[in-house]
Length: 109
Image (cartoon, rainbow, N blue to C red; front, side, top):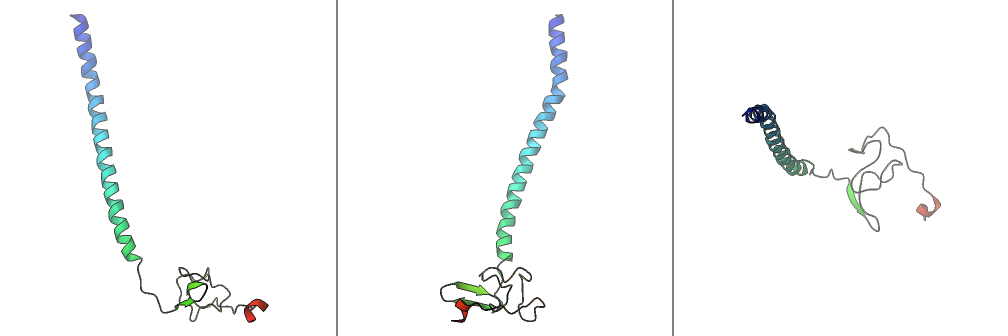
């Protein structure tokens, strides 16, 4: 009889811990599901926010592709995605960092 009482006390002693572990696990699963849902919603809206009309300083250069900005500037990135390192969002017109690019002999020909 003593052993049964001892086992019952031990079992009752473990019940709050087991309940707490179950509750923690349930909360973690719910939080993970909410974070996953938020990430899916954010990625959908973020893609739409980054789509913006081009300013009109995008042009196609044969053999290179699409470029943005003033190609005669020393800092132009010669890329279709970014204008330059000092003023990546533009606009190029009136930029205080503008420096005329020095032409090399291969570019002059």
